[in-house]
Amino acid sequence: MRAQAVLCTLILLAGPLQAQDRPVAITGANVVDLEGGPAIVDAVVVMHDGRFTAVGPAVSTRVPDDAEVIDANGLWLVPGLMNMHVHLGLTLPGAAGAALANETEAELALRMAANARASLRAGVTTIRLPGDAGHVDLALMRAIDRGDATGPRIFSAGEMVQVTGGHGSAVDEVANDGPYEFREAVRRELRAGATWIKIAISGGIATPGGDIAASFMTREELQAVTDMAHRHGARVTAHSGSPQATRDAIAAGIDGIEHGYFLTRAEFELMRDNGVWYVPTIVVSQPATMPFFERIGSPEWYLDRVRAVGERHWAALRAAVEAGVDIALGTDQFPHEENDGTISTVREAEYYVAAGMSDLRALRTATVESARMLGVEHELGTIDVGKLADLIAVASDPSRDISALRDIRLVVKGGEVVR
Ligand SMILES: [Zn+2]
Image 1 (cartoon, rainbow, N blue to C red):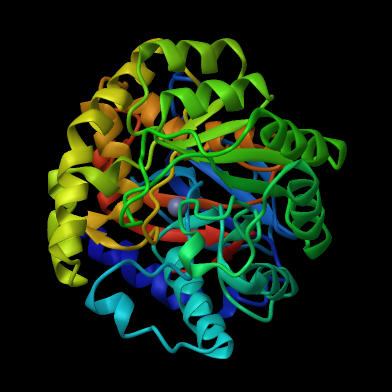
Image 2: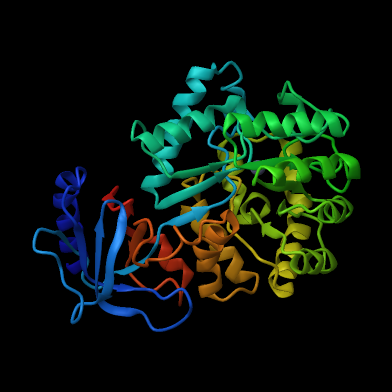
């Protein structure tokens, strides 16, 4: 009954809040402390002009007289979820992908906009895009920033930069060979508006053939990419399943590694010691995800590849958690993709706990740690005065049981109620 009442209040308030000339105050909820301290019980959270303007216990925090009030009695507030490995235009081998074979760029843009909207409504308020086609992602990012489209905050790598014959190169027109071409490719993405550079340094699951353990790029090519990106203040992350490729990339000053299918404790220690981030995307290879692949009509060779990689990928995640490498959450599926009774973003966090993380640490990978990886921890990632007002409300404390994220009751981005 209580939950029902809260929900009705939220729905009634959602309309007038969109304009948001007035401050919005959430009352009665508990604010989770991402440092592991006690929650702020019966809190008042005030948001105005897109930012948190007051956060504290009700006894000492004033609700402004002109505020719209959201009664969130008994709910738990955490920052909006962040998913660091998303392709809004993702297509995978199989029936669903084949149906999009003749998709025009205009159709792609609309499909990506719909995915962005669904991501946000699911509670994911910030995403990083490590490779989408045609710079549609950058156009969408600007449209969302302008308020012309609805979606999460986007940080993007533009188009993936890779060698001829590399992972995913079959679907891309542009490939690069030698350091000069890689420098040009990096500059091209940065000019288009990318703030990350994504490279593919080994094979992947989705490409038939192409050895996941191979190291595709020369040291000169790797060095050219990191040097050029870093000169422009951009960060570089790599698709890698390969221990050797990962070692080469660390030597060249890479900032992040995606997937890490075949990595061992030794590579994760090296990453930890060099401040290199790990984004596991564990949902792409685990048994609970198989219904997803069947649903989209994945071919048998693809399912075989997923199964073959799954066990080593899981061992890699466990090793990474143990080694204490910096981990940010990413799924390589749509953030809102239905997955084992929840969304992929939440299922991914649950896997982290199963792999040895505390619930709190798993929650951090989807909030403060992601913000830190993006270099925006002063703006996002916690519910603190001055930061951008992105939050979700859930029915119980996810820092004690991460599965609390399965039941999201309220989504707020920039101080505006989304859902
Ligand atoms: Zn990916």
